Length: 278
Image (cartoon, rainbow, N blue to C red):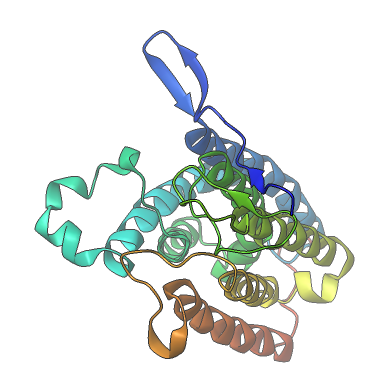
């Protein structure tokens, strides 16, 4: 047998200028938010051209601020409540110490949904249309985030003897699935391509507000549920009900809501043309 692959010795700091250090994880958030912001501007122009909802570039700029707050606050609070509530309730001063790590996608999702509700009400825009636009670009951030997880050597997979299994610095002596790369591929790249193809080539979905959001929930939930079979469960939680991980239990409601939202959106009539296009 050949020796297993060894995890590459990545420097967790991407750029350092004097005492200021920019870590890969922070860079992933910046790249995901900025890239998603620019992509949303393109999507907004397409929605406006359809004539069923008008979203300006200035509104997309404002939306970035709301989404950023939703991602950070929701992701952190989700991790606190879903994964380590007893620890953080006993050490409340550490809840805001996000630089120590600990963010949950499902919490970030709830934070972004709340941010979109407030944004849509402020600008008098249809919430589901905004949700479709955001859902289409979210996989870009997931792609960068999972790649950063891999560079940091965290959230590794379960022990395996596949040819590409590798030994992680803090994962013990056994070779493991590089599950971060599986997630980057499925939750990130594959889902991003799918959402963009559907947005640009299927007006029947783009113009039925909520359809693309439903597809994203189904796609992410299914991808996360699948990869969790290869990802090592959190040591402080282990496997839970029926041998499922916390990530799988949180993904099931996402899939159910996504199916319901997609069916509901497809049964509704296409929204009327906006006054600007009429």
